[in-house]
Length: 376
Ligand SMILES: *Cc1c(COP(=O)(O)O)cnc(C)c1O
Image (cartoon, rainbow, N blue to C red):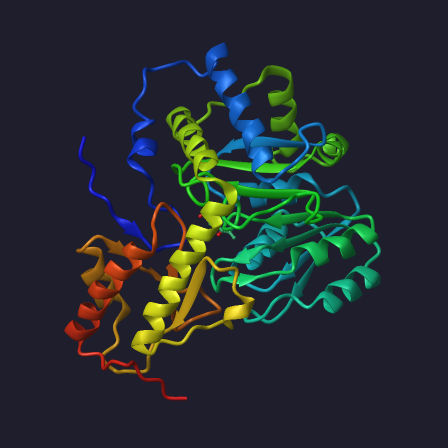
């Protein structure tokens, strides 16, 4: 089968290998069969291994849904009665976490910090001290809207010193930037299969501490479908998801996991870094500026400032590139006036070099002067 290869420079879903795409074409199976439960057990244990977790202490819980479901699940399931959550809010994804708290009416502190720099640890420490009833702290590892990296390990140490649980949204770093769940002071992390794992959409997972999940059994049940303890308990007792799993997506994820081990954690991170370096180089050559300082970036997303040239038109540039197999992505609210180029997926530096040839043509087509110009 010949499948057209598109280069996705959006922040997930990512470009996948053909072997992962084709793994979805498999004999029909009822997911209640032991055979399928066995495949999910394998996947769950591998998901813990990716972040170097001890399987006695950490478990992976799978859900059918996009990555936001894991944010929802962690926040609604892990907050004890009469306690508060602290949202370390310095980007569009932690803004979403605060919105989830509001929609469940969870008592929480929305600690709003600047979007263009790593979260200030002193502000986090002060907030923890002023609110001794905080039992759950939530932060984003890589704020995908800007590409900003937060100091998770140091923040986790502060959180643990106060006896709270630490949830990190690692959706846009998991299986890319190496994570050691215990050394990084993470109690819960999460991702969806279509990002770092380079598999398909529709499967998401939380990896976290068994003892904390077990303690959450008696916490208020704020959602019927999206409860962490409920799904964990069902997996532990039966090896299955309580409700229908995304069968073909699980097959793709298993294949992607095989390819992950074959490539290796370090080699994969080196490849993403090489890809990102090619993105930075290509941008620099055209005079583009980025929204966040290079040393504060997680190394997977570049948020690029749109030039002030009156001929600049994101839609038009996008459409020109899209028609030639390259997908670029608009910015997020809060970082208006940016667009994004990401280094996720089964791509490498030569793909980026090919992209920049097309991108340059798109700029010429629009009549944008190169090097691009900024007013301020
Ligand atoms: C992609 C992403 C999510 C989940 O987004 P969905 O559209 O629900 O898959 C959550 N957090 C971060 C940091 C992300 O990059």
